[in-house]
Length: 69
Image (tube, rainbow, N blue to C red; front, side, top):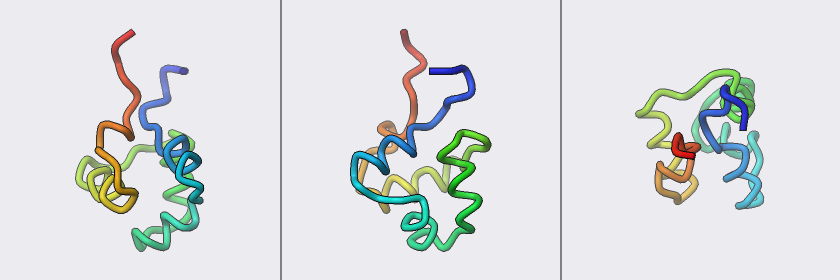
Protein backbone atom coordinates (compact mmCIF):
# COMPACT_ATOMS: atom_id res chain seq x y z
CA UNK A 1 0.00 0.00 0.00
CA UNK A 2 1.38 3.40 -0.91
CA UNK A 3 0.86 6.37 1.34
CA UNK A 4 -1.76 7.82 -1.05
CA UNK A 5 -4.05 4.80 -0.87
CA UNK A 6 -6.72 5.84 1.59
CA UNK A 7 -9.80 3.99 0.39
CA UNK A 8 -10.43 0.44 -0.79
CA UNK A 9 -13.26 1.33 -3.15
CA UNK A 10 -11.67 -0.33 -6.18
CA UNK A 11 -11.03 -3.52 -4.18
CA UNK A 12 -14.59 -3.70 -2.81
CA UNK A 13 -16.11 -3.09 -6.26
CA UNK A 14 -13.95 -5.88 -7.71
CA UNK A 15 -14.91 -8.26 -4.88
CA UNK A 16 -18.57 -7.62 -5.66
CA UNK A 17 -18.09 -7.85 -9.44
CA UNK A 18 -19.21 -4.25 -9.94
CA UNK A 19 -17.76 -1.37 -11.95
CA UNK A 20 -17.04 2.29 -11.41
CA UNK A 21 -19.68 3.06 -14.03
CA UNK A 22 -22.31 1.07 -12.14
CA UNK A 23 -21.49 2.93 -8.92
CA UNK A 24 -21.55 6.30 -10.68
CA UNK A 25 -25.03 5.54 -12.05
CA UNK A 26 -26.33 4.36 -8.66
CA UNK A 27 -24.89 7.40 -6.89
CA UNK A 28 -25.87 9.84 -9.66
CA UNK A 29 -22.25 11.00 -9.79
CA UNK A 30 -19.97 11.80 -12.70
CA UNK A 31 -18.10 8.62 -13.75
CA UNK A 32 -14.83 10.58 -13.74
CA UNK A 33 -15.38 11.50 -10.09
CA UNK A 34 -15.96 7.88 -9.11
CA UNK A 35 -12.91 6.81 -11.11
CA UNK A 36 -10.80 9.35 -9.23
CA UNK A 37 -12.10 7.95 -5.92
CA UNK A 38 -11.23 4.41 -7.03
CA UNK A 39 -7.73 5.49 -8.07
CA UNK A 40 -7.23 7.41 -4.81
CA UNK A 41 -6.62 10.60 -6.80
CA UNK A 42 -9.26 12.27 -4.62
CA UNK A 43 -11.43 11.17 -1.72
CA UNK A 44 -15.20 11.32 -1.22
CA UNK A 45 -16.55 13.26 1.74
CA UNK A 46 -17.46 11.23 4.83
CA UNK A 47 -21.15 11.65 4.01
CA UNK A 48 -20.58 10.38 0.48
CA UNK A 49 -18.46 7.49 1.76
CA UNK A 50 -21.39 6.47 3.99
CA UNK A 51 -23.69 6.62 0.95
CA UNK A 52 -21.25 4.47 -1.04
CA UNK A 53 -21.15 1.91 1.77
CA UNK A 54 -24.96 1.78 1.82
CA UNK A 55 -25.17 1.33 -1.97
CA UNK A 56 -22.59 -1.47 -1.83
CA UNK A 57 -24.10 -3.09 1.26
CA UNK A 58 -20.87 -2.96 3.26
CA UNK A 59 -19.71 -1.36 6.48
CA UNK A 60 -17.99 1.96 5.87
CA UNK A 61 -14.89 0.52 7.58
CA UNK A 62 -14.59 -1.96 4.71
CA UNK A 63 -13.97 0.96 2.36
CA UNK A 64 -10.96 2.28 4.28
CA UNK A 65 -7.41 1.00 4.49
CA UNK A 66 -6.31 0.31 8.03
CA UNK A 67 -3.75 2.75 9.36
CA UNK A 68 -2.44 0.08 11.76
CA UNK A 69 0.53 -2.04 10.77
